[in-house]
Amino acid sequence: MSLKGSAAITGFAELPSTKNPEGLTSLAIQGRMAREAVEDAGFHKSDIDGLLVSTPADSFSLFWPTVFGETLGLKLRYFDNVEIGGASAAGMIWRAAAAIQAGMCRNVLCVTASVSKGGASSYGALAPRSREEFDTPYGLGQPNSGYAMIARRHMHEFGTTPEQLAKIAVDQRTNALKNPMAMFNKSPLTIDQVLNSPMVLDPLHMFEIVSRCTGGAAIVVSGRDLAKRSKNPPVWLLGAGEAGTHMSISQRKDFTTSWVKDSAASAFRMSGVTSGQMDFIQVYDCYTITVLVSLEDMGFCAKGQGGPMVMERDLTWCGDMPVNTNGGQLSAGQAGSAGGMGHIVEAARQLMGRGGERQVKDATLGIGHGNGGVMGDQVTLVLANQ
Image (cartoon, rainbow, N blue to C red; front, side, top):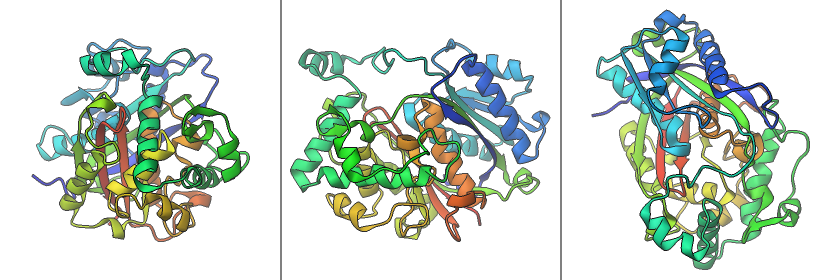
């Protein structure tokens, strides 16, 4: 089955990232994002008959789509909870399109939110047996340790350098300077600043790792007839791919090749286009190494050549290979699943021509991507405005 051209993104909303969530709850953020996204698309809540959410950490999981739908006063024909970590948002988009194509609904609201109040991460709350047996007894905490292992292995196999990884963070900070909603948009970064920032887990420095924050985002996905009624230019789903899974990096046989290779191949095959035709790439960026491995596995260069490629190419919004034009999560902040939704929102923003100062010139094709766990759950979307 192909989803090519079956549905389009017609509206979106995004809450600026913040470290000060006083008075905010995930329910309140999700409600606000839902309203703003529907209004942005030019619809009324009575037009919404589908709902996809990810359950916030400060809410209960049982029946959350039902509870949220009730809170909004929606009359739903399709609703579900999508929980695949940072890939949840991208996963919502193709699921919405599939539900629309199947005739289950016509207009799907996809909503994410996260409130960060400090403290330990809940990442390992439900650790699989593989992690309990092979990771924890040896001091391998997640997710930092897993990504540090990937980075170190990539350096060992291919000669990737700290400077090459740091360049990713530097270019994304340049993009963030043009994004008023980014958390770190006041001053540029240099490679030396990245490498002189505190070492969190060798070889990854502080500026190569996302900063947790509070945020929210929502997207409306519409069938072909409703998409033509939207007040925005539709952003069509051309291709989608999903692949995984592992929770523990010890279960991945090849650290330096990820499931992105499979998800991207499926997305490009469905869309009928190639990586070389993309005008931009919005790729999940919890760590600099995540970006590097993902770009390789999407086919933008040969395996092991990501380091030289990012040094040679300009990854900024006005460069020859725009990557994470909103600054990505490294400079915009990681608001849980809402951070993942930020990549899809930015892809839609660019293809609608609403990028403002960071608008990619003549953008018609782009990638939206999500990554869950330690390169475990992967969703790749190919999006277009024609």
